Amino acid sequence: MATPTLTPRDAARQAADLVQSARSLAIDGREIPLSDELKDGLRELLRHIAAGDEVDVVARPEYLSTQQAAEILRVSRPTLVKMLDEGLIRYERPGTHRRIPKQALEEYLVAEAQARKQALEDLAETFDSELPDEVVSTR
Image (cartoon, rainbow, N blue to C red; front, side, top):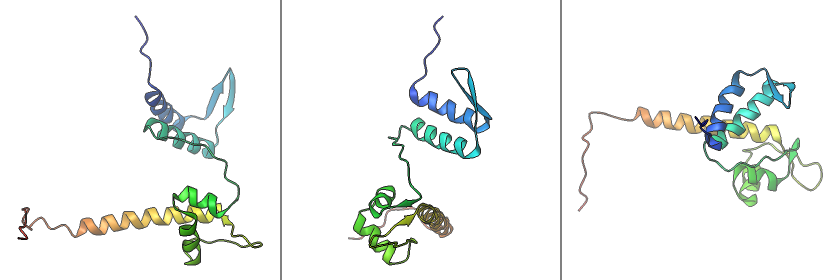
């Protein structure tokens, strides 16, 4: 009886579940302890692979250029500069160029996610089940 082979997405899904509770990782007979930070990174990577997302692993320095930060946020560099000028993201200017601390960008992303969640909760509270659920003719 043949052993069923897993698709890469299924294997990634199983690995993500296992990494969550793992204390170490064995590679070629060598056991490597897993820190919480490493487990979080591996779990995040595996979840994206399991979801079928395209994944790029990029090392990010402590400070990001405006172009690097814009790519992470998936906005244009001019849009990012406008966000910096409006004070939405903290930055430093050690010389003539702006540098965005990685932590400042992460704080912005967390704040944006919380704002989106709150907006959806506020919208959900406006739902009135007593309103008629019918098409309104405008002509």
